[in-house]
Length: 488
Ligand SMILES: Cc1ncc(COP(=O)(O)O)c(C=O)c1O
Image (tube, rainbow, N blue to C red; front, side):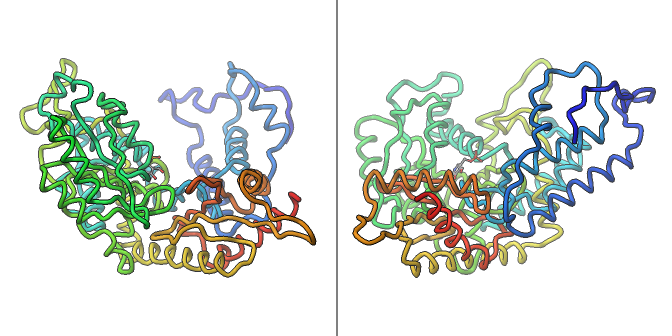
């Protein structure tokens, strides 16, 4: 590839009747298809090395706004190179941050829905039926009796939406009047995701409204402590707005005891929101479904289909158990869009306005693969995790830092010591893990990130990708120890 100055190229849309029509659509679709196909082929196995970006390409990325258009094939080629030399969470050994893995059917659905560009803010016709069907399929898959729900832009938005519904339920009229500072409380375990705090802040409750419920020796929210906190607030005249239980915490994959938490909520009439952004797909499995007993009693549930259900980002959903709670929270009238009587538009029950047909990704994937295949894939990643955990336990250079409930594993590398050498400990061992994670990311065979667990720095492997197989997962430890040896 050269870095020749831009020559004027014929605008691919020039002379065509429609301003944005391409001259050779079929030709360019064939090129795009070749790029996508190359990407998919490269995801089939871990890459031995990550390709460095082409120097000319990097230079081109520093250029200013083009006044004259470039050739479409050349531009597409550049785009594909950029992506190929970028971090992709779809690669089988990208194991950081509960990743999504861009299942092929989800990618096809994204392309098709972008082409039609339906807007799920207003009534979109038949697409609304598909959207509703996908919501109900998702709920059925998880075993949650959803009355309604919506696909959203992410777990953050789904959690926020659930919290806004809870706020309006606990304090009817808070949409209109706001909430007096210090008058409301939200309860979450110490392992809850930060999006819960951000949602509390954005809902105008103030961060101090969050009550951090202590956890037990399995890192699960303690229902008795929750009950005590709720009672104390009620006695003090503070309104409990919601309990946010986590079904698969981000750090350790812990599932809070949903049934016992639901009982506390029911006793005091408090809204139960379950943040299952990462872990809730395991509710559909025979091996781990029991961990989610009580889920059906939640008032609202967040699930990110773009995490452990393999959809390309972003494809989250917020499900609610009762009809009408979302409309009570978001229903409105404006002059530029009349909402006819009770039918309303989706935007009357969502936080977001313009929304693509995200549901199509999940719908097409379930339609083509079926729920049984998804359950088998989920069991597969749980199995891969067990293989990895056994390997960590058996390896003299590694230490398991918790017993994982789902597919997130925190572990440490303990560098072997030579004659008379003292083993690394304390801050030096923490720094070793940060340096090791950076070196691994640079090496590229395995993508891992550091995390902090119980005050020490660890490596955290998250198995949510259906492409990760047990053999390559077991080989991860050898890669880590080889890269660690190169640091010494
Ligand atoms: C438990 C949990 N909740 C919420 C989120 C936020 O999700 P998103 O990144 O889709 O907004 C995450 C992200 O990792 C998560 O793990």
